[in-house]
Length: 235
Image (cartoon, rainbow, N blue to C red; front, side, top):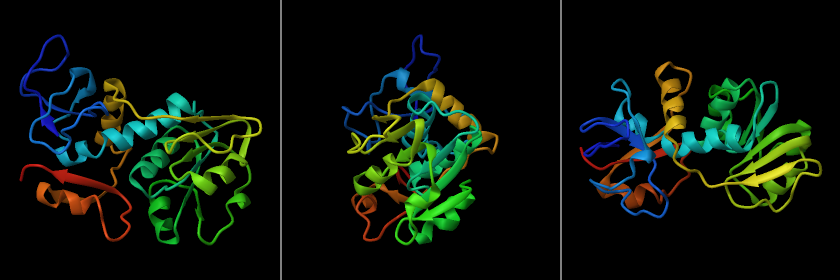
């Protein structure tokens, strides 16, 4: 998380607490200072901790854009969320529930309780349950791809949507649409997301907080971690 050092006609002021997502072509994520366009930043309210703010841009924006911008989610629809206990999946689960959807989460058996706590109404253990037993759904949010992505395409109801963040789907719904996308920064969406955190409707999913010296090991864990890893650049 950063503090604005410069300002113009941006709605930001010097010294203001901000958070955001740098453009993908920029280096410097793990740095004390980084130059960013003001359009990629949003004010971070004083009652939101920097660590919480740091967990929101990629996961929150990915979930928001996948559900509402690309998936065109409507209240009353059903959503299948792969990796529902993960950093992105838990955000998708919560935002889909807030949007009035019926959410079915997937993952490993150890993820069941966490996915349910984040708002999934049902859970499919991909190692032991039969995915196809859930029947048809209106939207699939795929963070896995491969065979799971192919099988998920066959679950889409007429007019439904398969949304993927792992590249173009290898299979498309018979009577629906498939879209893959790369998340982009959006100030208005960031503000909507952080407001939901402030009023208690949205919870972050931080699993590990590491120092800058620990960054390489933190991003290459020896065991699977379900949740967001945060690197604290300064003590």
